Image (cartoon, rainbow, N blue to C red):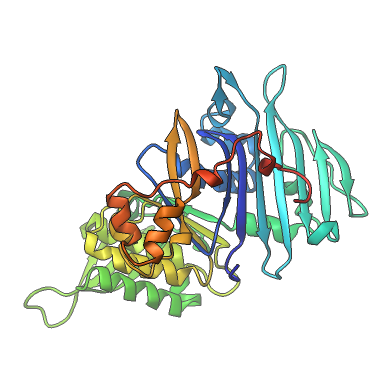
Length: 399
């Protein structure tokens, strides 16, 4: 496990199309599979946890259409859903955070059980809360909880649990939208990039001031994707702001400047990807960055640049991407163990490492992972398939 790996194992039951999953994540993980198989639903497990802690559980459910749209149905009946994240904090302490959410008989929902443990074999801070009541905890005083909220929100007021809360809410998830990036933006907090890129001008301004080396790296990668672009910066437009690019123009002695509304979708999306990966200076970088289909709107030749940016960024923070791009994986340097294959079985998402035969093929150099993807030969290994009833799906307690 590399130092940048924050969440190394994800278990979930009955979350959207995912009946059950138990997968390991590395510093860089590719979720590969056809459209509609549930790649985004897996990434949304992590995003849901962030939303539920940063805002409220009710808001996190509402953003996804309510409890009925989040919990998976089977046999025509809705199920309760649960999540467990096994992590390693920056100070190297391991731990896990888990919760189970269900419907109340009279309507609404409740957190039936929640657990947070730090350290090995229960030797560190921990708590267990059931329906708003603290059943076990190691602290002298534990804050009052309510059944409709995750207890970690209040427990974050205790120094023991604050590092877990901070790490989980510092995760960032991105489905970058060129139209949003192109529009004039209101000046905002530039500490972290928002999901669609709606504050990218403020983020770049902050990077220029506090993390110039990271901003220079963003511009270097952007120049590799669009060779005529030599830099980008935030500029004010009345009470709004936007991006201004320096770009070579035929016959001109010096680069001309163009604002975001004159740039292509591919240029803007590439910029958004690189900012998402390299935002924040020391101590402010995300614990994990999740990016939906980074290849969208980019020329296939740009895939090598994006792949290099993803790999390099994964040494500073954990990176998880969804994709079905052969070009992104078409390189012998891509570790087949970094790929999770995703498929759908009667509407249920299946996520597992690539099947053994394909792993051996890639390791022997016979095909790249990208070539196997074109041949539709990247499938979940049946030996790693789990069900909600399997013993591997234990959400609470020590493993």
